[in-house]
Length: 315
Ligand code: XMP
Image 1 (tube, rainbow, N blue to C red):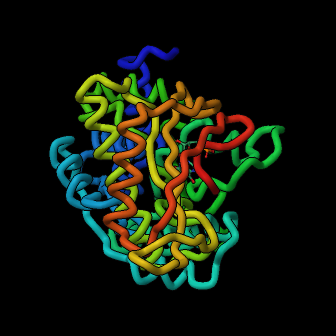
Image 2: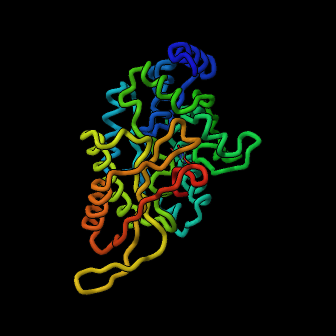
């Protein structure tokens, strides 16, 4: 484990030495990029600008929550609405790796535009060790393409800066605590957003369904934690499954979709254990999802697989 205050001093010094002009920061509101943003702001002051992209693939209320987080963390930031571009890039894409690449490429083009308008070619990212290890950065096989790793096309002018690339999540959280970044233990959310939580084609309607279901999973898990019937899990979310399934609506059979609920415990996301939900919580989640998405989602499943052999995300 690193020494957080010492890491902060060294990272700030390195950023000052590396970047003599301006830089923009790809800030998603997640703990990794928020820590990277606060370090960069410390190093560069008003020569740094965090850019938060509304991809249209975010969770319910995420733009508001992230904006509030950045204000509390004292960051200079800008919100860029680009949902149309992401949905256009994802049209007719169902393959998980292609989705990640489509989202990654769209991010890069947007950041190129943002960087040019801010007068820089430096892009700070919150990449951490598992991101590049699992993207095949070492001798291991490629497990997945993280949208934020290796996605810079050869013709791009952007030069990457990754101040956290040797840290693991628990270390980033320790650094966050030492920097006073709010809610250092909040759950991770993948960069490609709800695109990788909608198995199969990504349409605005399917993203809306998984967003509604995900908000219910978050509310019910957080309620159970507040009522002490569940210890705070590492990650808890909903996934919209591919294909159709039969349900009953009044006197009729309907073909709807299915949601899978995933709740896991982990330390560094390299391995994870499926959490056993209290029965009452699981029932309430299923009832609320099928009621809120009446006729659209007719079945709710619970994912009991550990990592390995599964991953935490579905795609
Ligand atoms: P997996 O699914 O590989 O996920 O077991 C491990 C952790 O990483 C998160 N994750 C991502 N984070 N960009 C990110 O910033 C990504 O492309 C990405 N994919 C997965 C995932 O939520 C889990 O916490």
